[in-house]
Length: 160
Image (cartoon, rainbow, N blue to C red; front, side):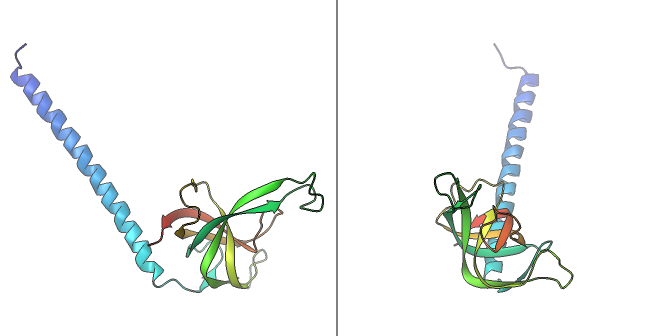
């Protein structure tokens, strides 16, 4: 079947569309890489003093897993109590988190060296690796909060 001029035009349009999509994907990858590099650059200037939510914090450390006793007795009866495996960020350099004087939930904590990580992100590929974690800090409030300070992580990147 001979290819008509109309079919050639359609093929050219499709090829241009595919090329355009590919270029847009490449641009998006470049943006993500630039964002990652910016976070890495900021790492060099990360503070040792932080604030609680709503402030956004970037913290570096190694992600580990720890077991903790859970209800009903949180370890008093090891035969009936369940265990909870939690992601814990071991912070590279201990930090201080300052509470605002009007804050009735959070309190100033000093020399914090590990924080529990709360996130909906998939952590499978991050355990036992150096990371940059971005999120909001807050004090423990329930029996399922196993460190004094926790971070609600919104972004996780590998640290160089």
